Length: 236
Image (cartoon, rainbow, N blue to C red; front, side, top):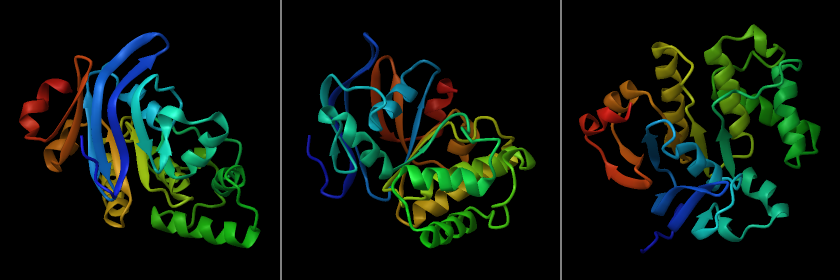
């Protein structure tokens, strides 16, 4: 398998496990800088396990994986935080601190990833909040925001370190259709600025309205194609 020089993710002959249970086998694909890729499949098909492998939350016992310049199949524990600084990770649940303001949530991530200059931290805070359209939300508590606004804060948090790729696990799963479309448009804007996006989703409407490249987890395999959305209706 030949990999492009500008790839941000390269997987070759990988086996994805949950504990001792094999979930996916013979996984090989590449995601280049600036690409937008959907990840689909039935519940339990291995989507989340695949994403966790990319950011080294699950070990990779077989095969090779190169993510943002790191050899994930050989990565040592002390290297994992450095890998994750190059990724924007968006989980199924928001994982915000609800007893802290939006600014305090983002400052926590900055300090955890090595930021120390308070002036630079404040400037970056303003930049990412403006990027997600919530520049006036810094002093608010998460519970004062709608679900869509909370998701925008999560996206802002993922952008702090200017990641090479956003890895998003069902980012619109708990949002109504109109809000989901707005969040998706934000992902497209981020992608258009040069950041790659890998988005796991069950949202059939998004794929129908915005067709593109798809990785599909099915029967222990990962299939790769630019899809005709109708051929994937059974996956939702």
